[in-house]
Length: 180
Image (tube, rainbow, N blue to C red; front, side, top):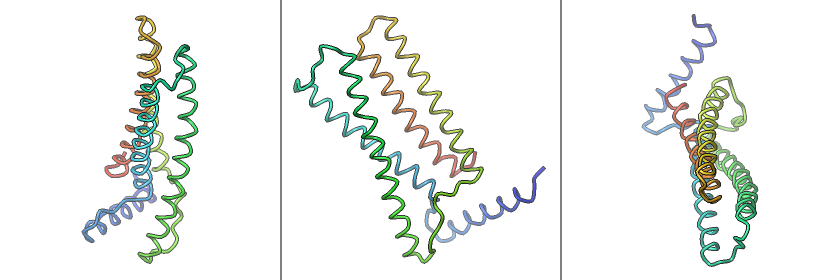
């Protein structure tokens, strides 16, 4: 049974989508833009960081006598870098969104407001992301049971973490477009 709020939300959402299609433009909500920019910046930041680490590794700039220390340092450097990239991305996205809204004449829009649908989309995407990371963690443990190098342990954890992040942001975009 639908409540009055569900019916009003459905009408407003469908009307908004219908109007955006009539204008001939692809309309993206703030949350979709945010997920898309996070997806792009995550891929770019990881690629740049990976290339830098690989080049330094191949040049012999790193001490690899202790593999655990080597990988721990690479991951400990990666965490603040990706946090900084996320913060910078959020700031720039808000600035450009405010400028775009002002140019369009739409005025100020509360960008940080989340409703139940936003929270549900976030939870579903994060749940799938955590599942992917958990599979990667088990795969990393299997590499150690099979006596592979510590490199494989950390590489599998990192790769599955990245895949989980990319899938999470992609699912958010999909869920905002097609519904949960």
